[in-house]
Structure formats: structure tokens, C-alpha cells
Image 1: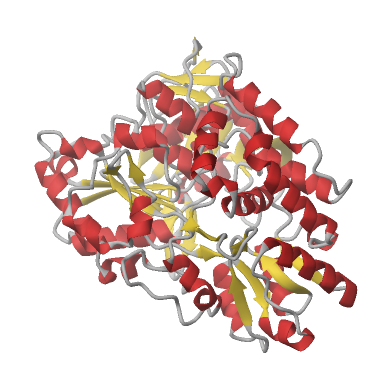
Image 2: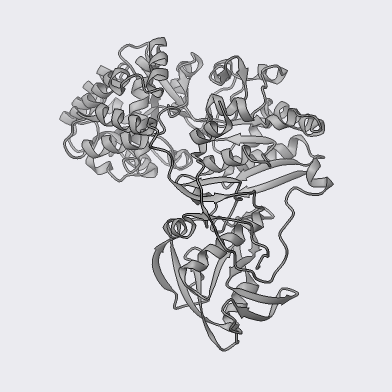
Length: 615
């Protein structure tokens, strides 16, 4: 498969023509030379995303190769999976890659190194390694994971004499019984606000039955290729989900519920059972103060043998580029990292929550989360796998929303299969290529990326546009700034927002500042706090040439030729998440949502690196 086809599947990049976009020049420091110099060339490249699992992964790398320099790029923007895939396919990929998904087989073959010949593979749980087999090769090794199962209030069950179900039909009967005996009690509480909950419901039921069989695997291949209908593979699943709906298993009170609400419902006796898809740290904390005992049971099929657990997916791989001549030192270090991660010490270094389980052979469930003990035999039997997503990327959101909408309106899932076939056919059609937004002819540095975002924001109409650097300083992140980099290729609707300012659902703010206030804003930068540490991040600006000395702006001229006077008034455009209302009151919310504004700013442009940086 060609590289562009691989990227289309995972990062939805396409090739289209665009027009040249003029960049406003301004004074400031010259762009950073990313990746240059002997030290950086010899360093291991690591991409760290703004969550604890990625942070702990970076710490584990440091532990395993303490004498090896690390070149760490920090990313806190939207759609981290998309950005990881873009970076791995770029001219500057990370050397060791941490994934919170399992990429497609084609992507793994193209960009990752085969690890199947190394001894450290033997340290892992065999079934988890087998799940990552790609035509006899293994490109990813599992990291810490969590088990997802049905949870239930054991104490409540014992008080009412309810039997823990062992088959799907027993679960349906139990839901009816609970509705009859305790009408105000929710049989199965769930995080109804998220479409992913309903797709997981579909998937868990399906993986207890047809999809776990050889015929089911063959059907999936045909469906992905457009040669089979959704009804053929999921018809029985839809019927089973309909049975639960008809039995009153779910409640409208959960329509907008989130993970923490689900925990509260289960622990506070508002629900008998829960379909939980996240929020484990909150649950573990609150379990300590709960008088009731909470247990777990697997997802259920037609028979006692058709039981299934969902396992979260965290994976580590090595870039294929390290196997090329000249990268021997880096490869040696990367293999030391993989060897370290195959030990209990290495897995413990990546551990975040008490519900995290080591993927190594012989691992045992956490003592602090009792439900795991109830389902451990099922897990050890090999009846556990990641929830299904690959091959269904074009329909899973719509499928989830369809179930949610019908669950709380008509209560009927009639039409779900036909709708999914229609969407899948549309996605496979030649005329359904990703919608082009902009062209990036060459890779940008991080600093150039921040600057171009300031330049683009100037289109909102102010005298000066301001954005903050979304990197990390001394372990302190600025999740609200511009992080990551733009890579050569095409930006479409799925990828254009990976580098725009964080919290892209927020709006742009218009400020009226004096020249003195404007200079102070830019000179002081943005202060961020993480845990007990502070860091100051640069503001980048556009629309103004400035003369700087020792971090102070001595003078400045706007792009229209006006000199910035200290007592003059100037319009500044800044994102709501960068705006300090206390320091600069009177800001006007423009109502322009950041991601929508940038879509307008970028459309049909060719984004070339800015010649100068303003910061």
C-alpha cells in the first residue's frame, strides 16, 4: 500500500491545490533550528502528550537510558492520535512511540520496526502479544492497561436476593426484575452524554458472539471492503441491545451523565449495575468511603462460555528509521528502553492509577479495585481484547448517536443497520475524499508553527494578534497555547486543528489596550502552574514590528505604518484561554469559536514558514 493511502486511513490527509498565503513580517528572534546539532542528532526523539501516561512513559525512558540525551517534543493540542500519526510519518519521527490506540496493520508495517525476534517479548502475557500479531510480526508491545467489565453493587444484590447473571438472557431478565421490584432504581447506569458509550455497548455485545468467531472475522474483512452489510455482522447484536432497552435496562436520567455520575449512581444506590467506560481514579477514591461492596462480571453472550472483557490499549513501538544505517547508537538505546519496559520495574514506572495492570506474564489484579478479582479468571482465559474501532471509524460515532437518540425517543433500533450501510458506502465512495483546507509545502519548526497561528489570527481584524507558546518548561505545560508542529502535506477537516491554540472550542476575545499595556502583556508572557511549579511562556504576536532589548520592547510599528504610542489605544485579538480578565478587564467576547475561525483563516491557503518570529 502506498504511503498516502496509509496516511489517509489514519490521519485523513489528502492532496489538493491551493493559493499562496502572504506572511506578515515582524521583528524578533530567528526560528529555532529543530533537530540540528550533534547533541540533538544523537538524542532519542520522544513525543510527550499532555496526560500522565505519556509523562510516565517519558520518565521510564529516562530511567532506562539515563546517559542518553532526550529530545522531547510536548503536545497538548486536539486529536493527539492524529498528531502522533502525522509526526511518525514525517521527516522527523519520534524514535520510540507511545500509542493509546493500535494503528492499522498497514501503518505498523510502514513506520514501525518488527520486534518479534527479541527475547524481551517472552516476558509479556501471551494473549496480549498475540492480539498485536501482524502477519507473524509484532510491531507494538503492550503497556499498562485497564479492564472494563460490568460493575454491580454486591451489597444491594445480596439484600434483594438478585443472582449475578451469567448469560445475556439472564441479564435481560434481571433488568426486568429490578424494574418491577424497585421502579426508581436504574438497572444499568451509563455515561449517556458520550456517543462512544453506545458504540462500546454495541461492540461488547458483538464481541461476546459472532465477531469473536472465525466467520465473524471474515465478515469484518468483507464489511470494511464494502462487500457485506452491517446487518449480517451486527443484526444479532442489535436484537440483544433492543432486548435490554425493552427490559428498561437504561434510564433517561443518564442521558447527559458522565463517568463520575455513573460512579455516584452505583455507589449511592441509585443504580444496581453500571456500564463503565472510564473515570477509574474517581471511582477508586470514592470506593474507599463506600459502605457497600462493588463487584464485577464479564460482558455476556448466549452461553456461559461466551463471556468477554474489554482491555484498554496502550502500546509502545520503535520507529523503523532506527533500523537504517547510521542509527545504531539510537537503536541500541531504544532496545534498552524496550528491555526495561519488559520488567516489573519498567511497568511500574508507567503506572498511573491503581486500576492499571501490568501486561507482563503472571500479573495479578490490584488489591485496591475488588471487581478485578471477580473477572480475573475470564481475563486469564484470553477472553479480553480492545474495543472494536479499526474498520468502523467512518460509522462508530453515528452508530452511537443513533442508539442514544432512539433509546430516549422511539426506543426502537429499527433502521440502524441501513443507516450504517449508507454511511459506510458513502465513506468508501470515490467522491467522499476528505475536504481540503490548506497546503503545507514543508515541515515547520514548533516556533514557526506558533508564529503562523498568530499570523492567521490577525485575520480576525485586530491591530495585533497574540497567541501563547503551547510547549512545556521544566515539566510545566501550557495546554492552552499552540503546541506541536505543522508537517508537509495537506490539512483537511480532520487534521487542521491539531496545531491551533488549545481548547479550540473556546472563542476569540477582542481587547482594547494602550501601547503601554500591550507591551507589558507581551513582555510578561503567560504564567502557568502545574503541581507546585510555575513557568512563563512566550507570547507570539503578529501585526507589529518591534525593537526588543533584554526582553523589553523599546519601540514598535504596526503593519499599517503607525507607531505604537504608550498612551495610544490598539485592538488586540487573543483566545479566551490566553485572556487574563483580571489583569486586562473589558475584553469583548467576539463569539468567534477558535476552531471555526481558524478553519476560515486557513481555507485555500498555502502555509509557508514565517521569515521572522515575534515573541
